Image 1 (cartoon, rainbow, N blue to C red):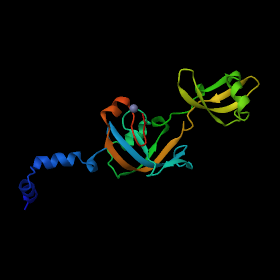
Image 2: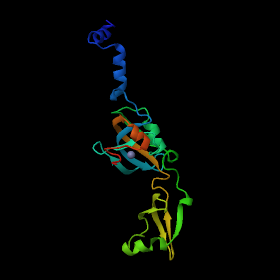
Image 3: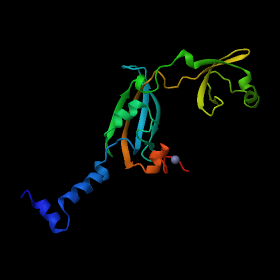
Image 4: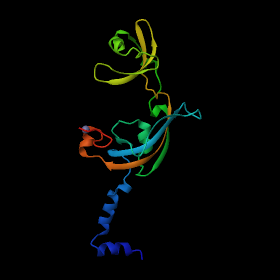
Length: 200
Ligand SMILES: [Zn+2]
């Protein structure tokens, strides 16, 4: 009886068109696209590409997922490309080349700075300029970034401002935990509000 379902909805006051609309809006059919608020659990490993050994970097569990506004430019391009179209509950395993992640390390981002930049802080934290230390810095215009101490000379400190994951191939495995449509305010702000996002 191919018409049985339709008949049932007509008898109970629903028309087939209502049924279609209801299903299309339901969360289980929602796919990741621009202006979706996405929460994923994941584990990240990196390597130098190919079959070189992988190194564990970090993970986010289902109880503390990564939540972000899809398509707002806050995530690396390859990560969003691999998630686009997935549904809640879907698992993923992706491999992202440096070109679609943090790019390649560049000598242009290794900078020799005068020691005076650090002098006041070094008085407070004598171990600050240990080689390999990551130091949060800003450029005086409010841009914050992190630099790694590469070498320390008499009057200068050489800092490496390349992203720690530059040149690395990223391997994410994880699961789409929850999806919802972003509010108009979230879209306007370009970030998520509430759990996992901004509180303001
Ligand atoms: Zn906001």
